[in-house]
Length: 108
Image 1: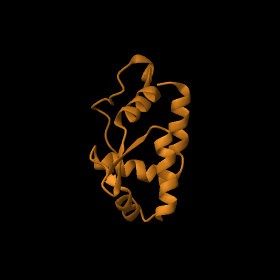
Image 2 (image 1 turned 180 degrees about the vertical axis):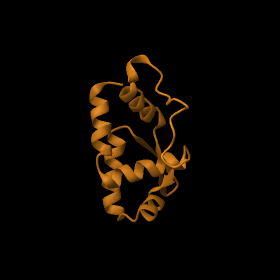
Image 3 (image 1 turned 90 degrees about the vertical axis):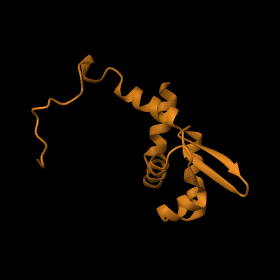
């Protein structure tokens, strides 16, 4: 993933409503949600949500499709995975990032 695309994605996610919308769409899966359902679930005004969805779309993080009168939005998992790969490239200096099994969780 190119640095410009990474910066656009991170900038789009650096806002509470957009981050919430993106997380909701990731949790929903490839079928996505109608804009009205996203608005309802996040308790965000439709006019405000429209702006946030446009920003996420411009960053390549979500995609939209028309189905009759409704517009459905879904996460772009390719972009999401590209962003995660970019952020974790060369992680841990090439060593395994999996925690040791002798490390205990704070709530055993």
